Length: 170
Image (cartoon, rainbow, N blue to C red; front, side):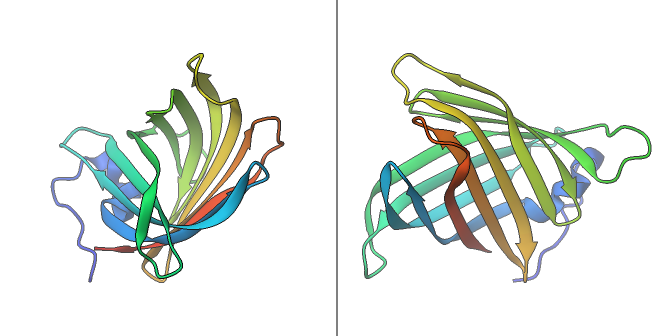
């Protein structure tokens, strides 16, 4: 499927145009506090004409045959490009993500071509949420697929690999 630029795209979103749409695929999740597992995922990036992207992601555990077994994670948020300081490469980015498990994250980062690097600036938790202190995310467009990786620091563990996936535009 060929990607076509949205002609109604607000100018500040141009560096993120390659993200817009729906993506599906699979990946692996693991952490010292959990058993490694395969998961399926769908992500959608959209806009309503204002200069930010809406973001939703759903993940579910897969069995050995690739069938959905149980929900793993859901998150929603907004991706906002901001003006970059004069003389710097790429586009600065603010990303806000919330989880139904009582966690809200604010990421700061940069878009450089088909690559996005993010790191948490703030993690807020409700009193019932699991301990979670920091994360980094990497997104990239590779051979027309969306690849991403998440490192996190949680439950007394240092920042380390937690999840990654390869998704195809649908």
